[in-house]
Every structure is written in structure tokens, then in C-alpha cells.
Amino acid sequence: MKIALGCDHGGFELKEDLKNFLVELGYEVVDYGTHSPDMVDYPDIVFPLARDVADGKCERGIICCGTGVGVSIAANKVRGIRAANCHDTFSARASREHNNANILTLGERVIGKGLAQEIVQIWLKSEFIEGRHLRRINKISDYEKQ
Image 1 (spheres, one colour):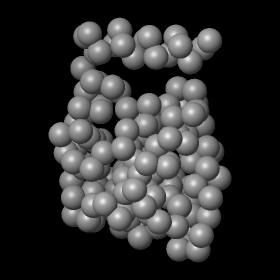
Image 2 (image 1 turned 120 degrees about the horizontal axis):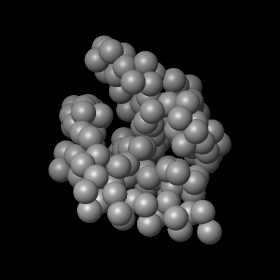
Image 3 (image 1 turned 180 degrees about the vertical axis):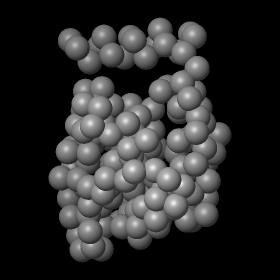
């Protein structure tokens, strides 16, 4: 699985840790930056990453910032993206199983590296269970087309 990975300055250290973790697990990682802790504007990272996930160039994406909130808001502006800001394993699993989230956002200032790794692992292994949830996802997709 090819994973798009990105961050702003507030999530740089967490992104770097997750990049190594994902490679160790055998995932192919495309690093969209930022590549230093110097201040950047997160939309400049998020929009290209989210477009590539929506277009299928990467199967899923993970984006880090200080809280995970700003990057989630930006990613969800891209048609076809369902970004979920998760700071616990239950939400990570549910975001995949019920919402078919294709981008996970995390806050470096909210959770530690160990929990982030656990969340990422659960999120990547969880699958969309469709059923009644597919009807809801289709309604979101239909609304995006308006």
C-alpha cells in the first residue's frame, strides 16, 4: 500500500517518526513534506497530498500538525477526501469501518509517538464494512458533485 505522508511544522517530528515506522512495516511512503521544523502554511502541503489520494496515486494519506484539526479541515475541502482527525484507537477503527476515511490526521501536540503508531497501525489495517455505511458515504459523494 502506498501512503501519502505530510505535515506542517507543528507535526514535523511526528511525521518523521511515522515515516520510519511505516517503512519498517513494509509500506511505501511518499513524503509530501514539510522537510524541516521551519514554519510553513499547511494548505500548501495538504492540498497536493489530498489530491493525490483522491486521484488514487496514493491509497491513503496521513497528515500531522499540532492538533490535527487544521490539516483535517483543509483535506476535507478536496473532493473525494474523507479525512478523520483521530487521537484514539476506537475513532481510528470506526473512521475506516464506518466512514471509509482515506486520510488520517494526527496532532503531535495532542498525542505521543507510541499512541500515534498504534492509531496508524489500526487505521491502516481496518477496512470499510459497507452495509448501511455505504449509503451514507454515497450521499456525501453525491453532495460533493453538486
